[in-house]
Image 1 (tube, helix red, strand yellow):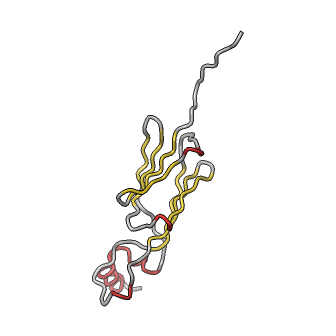
Image 2: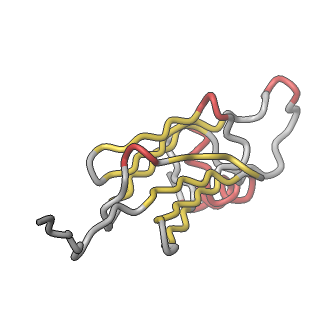
Image 3: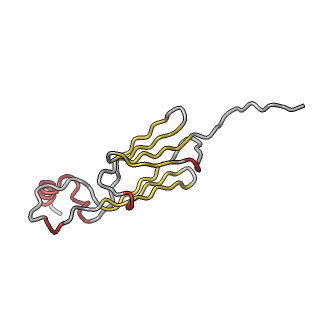
Length: 130
């Protein structure tokens, strides 16, 4: 593809013209720690919960899904297309021990928040019975 053709794609489809072919994309992610949990916040505006899969495999949090493109039957002419659509997957290594059975996820205002409660680690005092 020539540079002129690439410039034309960018002009009409934004920087993400490759996504029109159904190529995967990656949503932005924030990861932060609280006193009791590690929290993963994912920007997934427009992704419906039925098109979302959140799972844990060992120390890896896997967030996958698909954001559907707008219905093309109503589009007469494209002027700009920057919002990515199609399949996505993020694989995130969780750097701290967490309770796999207590992981929770919720979607609010276009953000998926996955909370991974910390497991108790480190020294633990054990009482000795007599």
